[in-house]
Image (cartoon, rainbow, N blue to C red; front, side, top):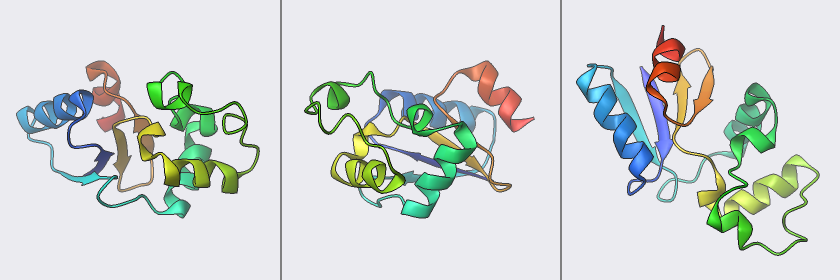
Length: 116
């Protein structure tokens, strides 16, 4: 069973969910605007992925619209505060396996490998 975190109107999330349905892979989808992600999950995901820069989409319009001071978080608490204010900063979708493994984004080959 997978847990998919994303935004319900995100085209990439929709593509992943459709692909998972076609593959008959079970999942739970959580829209993280409606249900904010717990801080401990975000910190753990950042660690598993290799840092906040892998979890936060710094190429997004949301990031580009931040002021320069906000774009320089140094501690987990600063990243968490930024995500709390701007949940769309989290890359999407975030795919979490029951064993705690995490990946972000949807590229079919990478998801197939992740699920293997």
